[in-house]
Image (cartoon, rainbow, N blue to C red; front, side, top):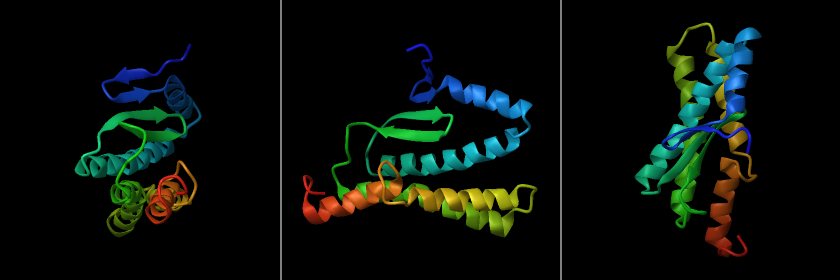
Length: 150
């Protein structure tokens, strides 16, 4: 592959992400992009910390032009309770960001941070894989119907 990501231990940064940040500087939307990536990083950090608490290892964290994603070690999480906890942690962190921003922050980007955080939390709760809501729905179905039917 021509455009391999830069790798730093478990962190992978794709070259197109770097290009996006450079372009955002020249087209004057760097601040919004940085805020968006910070919100996304907090979301993914919530997943990672919850996975760690459930004794599930993170294989890698990818920083992509359209966001950040975490890959767990192994293909699936065996315990559906752990899957639900890990998947729920991200959207919960978004709603907490919005809540604390509303209550304690009065900067220039207050409305953007609140709106982006709530939108990201709601979007990630849609019951479609690979979104968090899809992971939660799959865990519930596996719990009720078994692994094959779920």
